[in-house]
Each structure stands twice: as structure tokens, then as C-alpha cells.
Image (cartoon, rainbow, N blue to C red; front, side, top):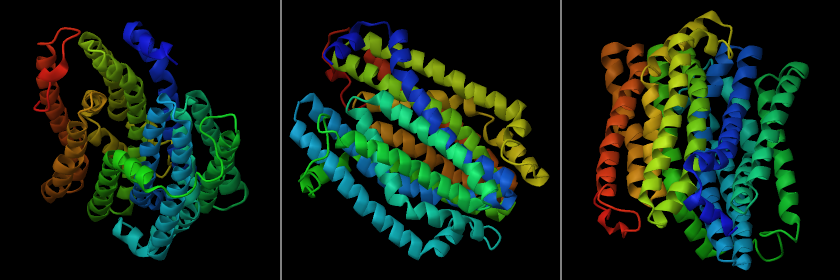
Length: 459
């Protein structure tokens, strides 16, 4: 383990990016495919209104993910620090408290959501035509909510405790198993949209069993043992504080998706919600590759900043930003040149396909800019400037996208909903560029080895 930091500070940046980013990209791509699989089979096997029903569940699922991240990301960050300190007893307690917190929060979320399921789904943009599909799908997903929280939380702990390859392989296993089960349950057993939900819960359950067996091995650090599941207020507090930033981002995504669904229903009807669900799934796949690049850049940039090797920090940022821009430029090509072919993966319904293709072309006409914006935002997090990172993330969604989603449709109707995305992408790009230029100007005054006090907090 001591060789890794030396490598981060001496090895060629391009080689390090391949080494660190590739597993993350594979895992993130698998995660995005995991989300797409249900949409594809539901769209092809159940119908266009079922796609819209599924899209209505996205805000609720985002909110569930937000609460899971609140615990899981904080615990995995604490785990990395404790293992580095060789404080194995405390690491075991973090593992146990993650199980306890995720179980309690998962059960509470499930109970509240199930009690108010219909009002929630109507609030998220449902109608009499789409609510039956959304309810059938979401009820089963909520029954497995604790499993989902534990699966993602423990997978994150597995990655942070020195088993990134195994964590990646489990993600791939979950995706493949879900893909196999979907057609069996939807078509073979005739369960329709319920079959897709059962396939999701069962595939996550199978992976969770494997993860539990992994941590049940007494030779592993951390591992399950008696006494570690007792609630520890300090561990819970620290874990929740660390995970609060990502929780806010996921909660903001829930709020934005909720408002998009409401605007789509108002100006485009039920099929408009389904069209956005299709466009969102396609866009999400490319964005997750950028997130994988982010995860590869993070240890390299963070280590070299700590080692005062500022030239290497700038180099890894530039290389990562270029790669992310290539990825989002490919998304631009797919969205603008081949939108109908891309959307046809999800549906053969002509009306839904027409709305989806037009929407994909409109919403992603400036999407090539967001690769730079995503990497720039993450750079501030890598350097410990968390407040700036959170501000840049939330400003695109809350300060830019939400007002545009309200104002533009007043003049442009349904087109205004779709054009809100490229305008907010452009504004977010400009804001990120301003922040980054100011940062790099201060970097320019530093030589490798200098104290980074010039960067301060007033960027």
C-alpha cells in the first residue's frame, strides 16, 4: 500500500488515469446500464404509458438514493481513513453502524413512502393513465428498499477497504443477472412492469448475499463480529456529516426531476414524461462515464496537491477534462444526428418516439460543454474546496435549470421545457470556467513545493 502514493506522485499521468479511471468507468457504465435495462424491457414489452409510469418513479428513487448516499459515502470515506491509520477496531464499528443506519433509514423510508404512495406519485407528475404502472413498480422496489441501501452501502465499503475490483465485478454481476431476469419475468411469467421490479430486487439480493459472505470472513478487515452493530452516536454523526454534501446533490436532482415531470405533464402530456425518461436514461449513460473519469482523477489530483506538485494537478485536470469532453461530444453526436435510432432502443411507439427524438436533439444540443463542467466541479472537491464544488453542482440545477423550466415554457410551450437544458448547460459551463480560471491564476503563482496558502479560501 505504501507504493501507491509514490506512484501517484511519480508515474506518468496518462498511465495513472488509465489505471485508476478504467475500473471506475466500467463500474459506472455498468451502473448506468443497470438503470437502462428496466426501461428498455418495460418500453418494448409493456408499452409507452408504462415508460411514462416508470419515469414518474425517478424522483422517488433519486430521493431513496440520496438517503442511501448520506450513510454509504460517509461510512466509506471514514473507512479509508481508519484503515490508513490501522485502526481496525474502529473500522469494524463503522461497518456495523452502516448496517444499522441503512436498515433503520431504509425501513423508515419504505414505510412512509408506502403509506403515501399514491399522493407522492401524483405529486411527481402521475395521472390516472400512468399511476397504475408507477404504483405496481414502485411498491415492489420499496419492499426491497433496505436491500438496495445495504447493497450500495456495503459495495462502497468493499471498494474503500481495498477490494475495488471485486466491488466492480459485483456491480457487473448485478447488471447481468438483472438483464437475464427481466425478460423471464416480464415476458415469460407475464408479470409486466412488476416483473422488472422483481428482477431488480432479486438481482440486488443475490449481490448483497455475496457481499455479506465477504465481510463474514474473520480474516478480512473490516469484518462482521459481535458488538459492532450497536448504534454509535459519534460514528453516525461523522458519517452523516461527510455524506451530507452528496445527499444535497441527490436531493436537488430529485427536486429537479420532480419539477421536470410536472412541466412535461403540463405542456407535453403523459408521453412527454416518458420521453424525458428515455432521454434522461441515454444521457445518464454518458454522464456516468464522466463520473468514472472523475473518480480516476480524484486520488491523483488530491495526492499531488497534498504533495505540492501543482504542475501534475494541472496536467491531470487537463487530460481528464479533454477525455470527458470527448465523451460528451459523442453524446452530442448521438443526440443531434441519430436521436431517433437511439430512442428506438426503448420504444417502437411512433408518437412516443417522435417526442423523444425531438426532445433528445433539443435538450442535448449544447451537451458537449458539460464534460468540462463536471470535471471542473470535481477538481474543487479533490483539492478540499468542498463548498465551491457543492455550489457549482447545485447552481446548475437549482439556480439555473429550475427557473428556466418555469419561465421558458410560458413563452415556448413544450419546446421551452426541452431548451431549458442547453441554456443551463451553457451557463454552468461559463460559471465553472470563471471559477477555474481564478484557481489556475493562483496556481500560476506557485512553484512545485511552495506552500499552498496563496490559494486560501477566497477563490
